[in-house]
Image (tube, rainbow, N blue to C red; front, top):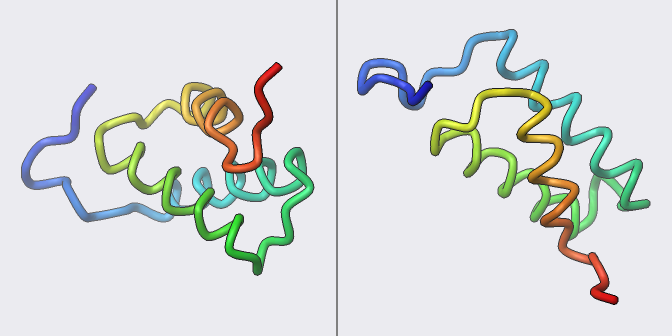
Length: 74
């Protein structure tokens, strides 16, 4: 469900914890140093998707894994 105008830009502790879990997992799966530029891109992608209304943890995980900056195409 999209966020209301009043909720945009406000993150609850549970949201932050979820985004941190997704970030940590994306860095681990992608073998990305959490302090690197690649990790910054992952974080920005997660935040952009969340701010656009993607609030389901599994959906965010799937989207971030699909959008890894270093993903190779077959």
